[in-house]
Amino acid sequence: MLRFINWYIGKLHLAATNDSTLATTFLKVVNLMIPPPSLLSPAIAWRVWRGNWRPALSVPSRELEATRDTTRELN
Image 1: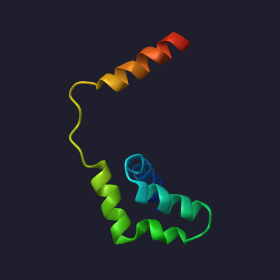
Image 2 (image 1 turned 30 degrees about the vertical axis):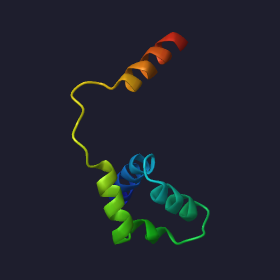
Image 3 (image 1 turned 45 degrees about the vertical axis):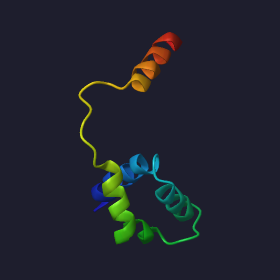
């Protein structure tokens, strides 16, 4: 069960980068404003699934390349 929760929270974090409802719900759980099982509600689970469902990129995006270039300059 712990592996599933860790996997799910990782997917939630990914989806929350583009979904303010997920981000807000996660922050409410972290700040003990709502109970942790709220993250497993059907509406939230649907948003997590939808936020992670996208085809794999075959070519890196320009932003990703720019980030890599910046990281190389720092090293």
